[in-house]
Figure (cartoon, rainbow, N blue to C red):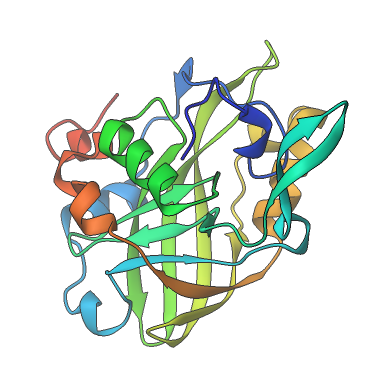
Length: 225
């Protein structure tokens, strides 16, 4: 993933400039704590841990990466990863509201920022019941300063078609009230609540991202933030 200060508009899920840091983090709730402290077993049989799940949007195909006199001159036909989610054996999930145009870009970002809190990383927890996968992920939204400075717990759900496909992945109720507090959050909210069919993409996530260092694991020891 590209560093936030370089070609930043390419990185955001819906085109908004993303702030590296967040001012406020919502206190962890009991649902989150329960999933974090007692992760489900046998997850590896349900989802593929050797990469990420994503869907490449039509507007990101033939993606311009260089311009001359205001006109695009170089394109990437198919991004390597487009807003992917990654599952880990310890019951954690990682969402990137970012586009990685190639594998080197993905590797360089993860080596530097994989487990950090103040980045494009959105960590959460997940569980699986039969063919339904449920998750709670900290998602960043704009606050009163019009920088994306609130990390709020958001619920997600999808249907596992097989180990290489998840259908109807989207944010579900209860929605955080602040997520719709400002007009600048509306596009983010609509993108996250829109159902998406995700396909698996092999990527060296396990080698580059140490989920045992994810910042949300602090809640196992301390129930408050």
